[in-house]
Length: 179
Image (cartoon, rainbow, N blue to C red; front, side, top):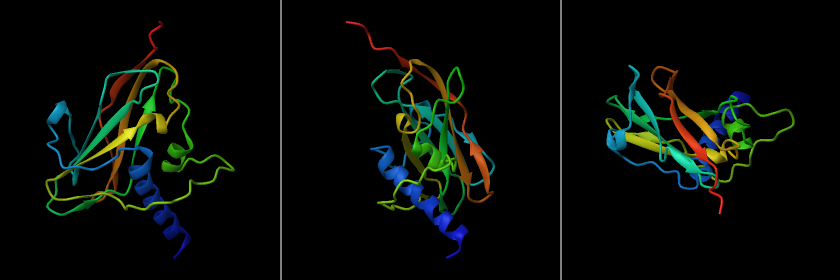
C-alpha cells in the first residue's frame, strides 16, 4: 500500500473511531430529516446536510451535543468518508483538542495520531435514507468558558467530491448558578 493509501486508510479509520468512541453515544439512525425542525441544505449532489444543537443553552459542566443529519438524495448507497464540525466563539475558534486536530489533519509538530483501537468503517446511507452523527463538542474543543458559540459541519459529497457545508447554528454555555 502506498503512503497516500495508508494515509487515506488511517483517515477512514479515524472517522470510524471518532464516530464510535469520541461521541460516547454517536450512532446512525434512519430519521425523518424534518423532525425537530432540522433545516436541510440541498446541495445539488447526492447529499443534503443539516445540523442542529440538542439544546440551545447548556450549563457549564454539561455536554453540548450537535446532531449532523445527512440525507441521501441519490438512487445509490452513499459512503461518507469525511466530515467534521467547526465551532467559533466571540474570540474566534476555541482551542482544539488532539481529536479535532487529527480529524481535520492539523496536528501540531510533534503530535502523534491517536491510536486506532476500533475500526467500524465509514457510514453508508441507503437511497432516500438519512444518517445522524452526534458530536460531543467538548471532545473536540475547549468549551470551558461561558459564552455564545456557533457551529457548522462540513461533509465531503462522494459523488461531486466537494465539501458541503451546513447552515450555522448557535448555542450558549451558561455559567453555573451560584448557591
